[in-house]
Length: 143
Image 1 (cartoon, helix red, strand yellow):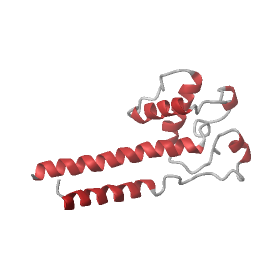
Image 2 (cartoon, one colour):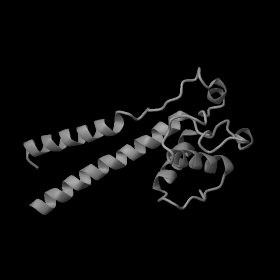
Image 3 (cartoon, helix red, strand yellow):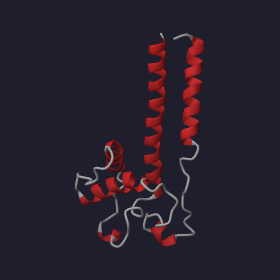
């Protein structure tokens, strides 16, 4: 790869990363507006998260706390659920959490916001890999 092409690829990936990471903490709830939820390491039920986002964050946490490895969610591929499960397990995200403490709480509430940011990071990484793959495929097809 020639230096100008390497520079272009670097700038392309930096631009793609900037676009994907610029709003990664969007919707972070302020603890002063929901002190009870923040104290329990939960987010408020009306927090501004994507309607499907909680599935990829709370299901792995629920799987870890309950000890059940089946997410029982088969509508979408499970790569992000499994990545978040492994991350939650490695970081000890289940420490101090129990199913009893979640009684009456919906799935969109049980995970703390930092777990949402980690899940968004995995999604952004997938987007960067897709940009690099499209570039490599185009380069190969164009000669």
